[in-house]
Length: 341
Image (cartoon, rainbow, N blue to C red; front, side, top):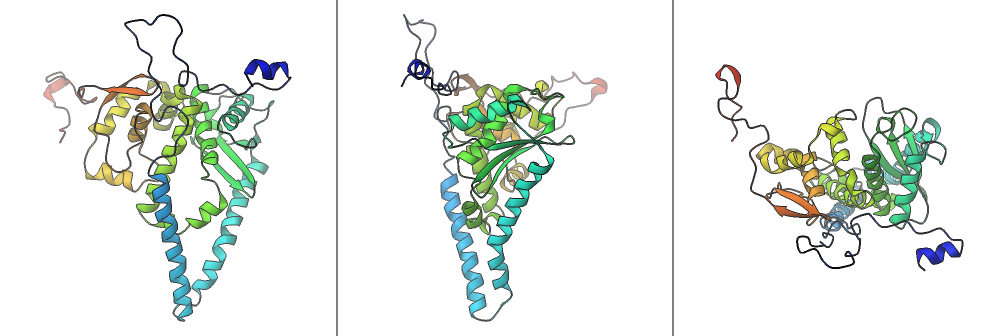
């Protein structure tokens, strides 16, 4: 049914698609100086990062092998006490998830149509847009200066928690578009199945293997970013700004200059920092959100410097000078800028 037919039948209209992503070509004669661009591959409906499922399979296999090794050791009488730990894992995970859900229920402020209504609306719209069967619970908890949000679940319930520093005093969003991107990212974790009890139980061993577990976590974060982008693409600069510089300085962050540093900053230790991180390093994450034609970089830094041209599409540009570079002789007392290798 069309939106008009739904309205005539007394039914709510569907949530509209993301503005500027799935719009039809303009009617009328084409402007010879402009052309309509189809949405880039990762700018249309949310997609999982291509590394997520293969890495998930490897992590599950590692967990199964871990359980199998424990059973084998117990069967041979080598380590009898390990059996108790293996049996406790499912119960321990259930208790941890229950406590994680209980904490915001008894300490946080629930988002409702009358409390934090902007946040509540964003959660409802994201759930509808992503095809969830019901709206997740959403809570605001005291941030004490920390910028964070997360999604989890317990039983059949799913929920989102947003730290209070993402809101202004009085409940108005500090940066509405950035907040909508962040909420879309968290609801995306739910839509992508990342908060499932069985998924977490089946990866509990593999996720603790260095590099491998971090790789799956980074792939999941890139996937959730695809959902956040689909919910509010214009929220990307503010979201990256607030994660990089905080709630007061977010507007001072230049997204292009920040994303360019994903290419500029090279070397073994930047590579190792990303490889061991549960989230993509922010410069790589910004580069992935700017260039929606390809998935986010997992192990090797982005090689191209690009600029957006609309609908998530980009064009390569000549590498600009390093953003920290200055003209020779422009610094006082004859000092030189730091060397770059």
